[in-house]
Image (cartoon, rainbow, N blue to C red; front, side):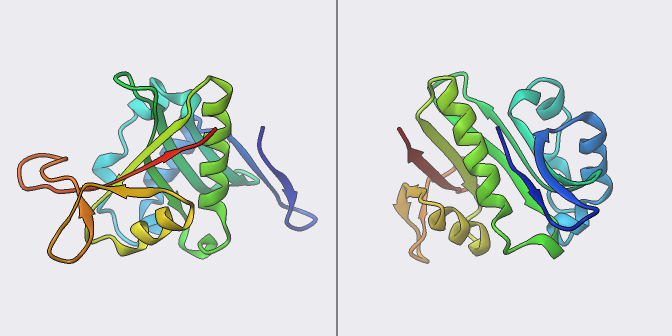
Length: 167
């Protein structure tokens, strides 16, 4: 499963499961993916150590250029995308969409037909991305017209919860 696409004579882009060394590279280069280290605390090693079969990277040679950390919910038949990151100089090339498609392929293979992801109501870039790939917002519109689930991430921490059903 995955892509093997020649970029040039010396580079090959491919999807693989995220190794611990890939994870450490992501942490080291976190600002290159996110523009700051604001998401660093969300990058817990359990996503590699315990859910490594649902953690994917796209690499060029040995450099991680995009990643998806996901897992299968233990409370419902749903795949959950916890984080998806693309290096800033590789954004707008469809890599996030490729990783989502790869995760969906994995979920289909194990009989899961639902996908879920969340973001903050102020993260318009993430909201736009998830809507473009066909996910739907759930919840009630807030004052800015964004559908949210109140207190989803704790008291006063509303979140945009995206869902998708695929067959």
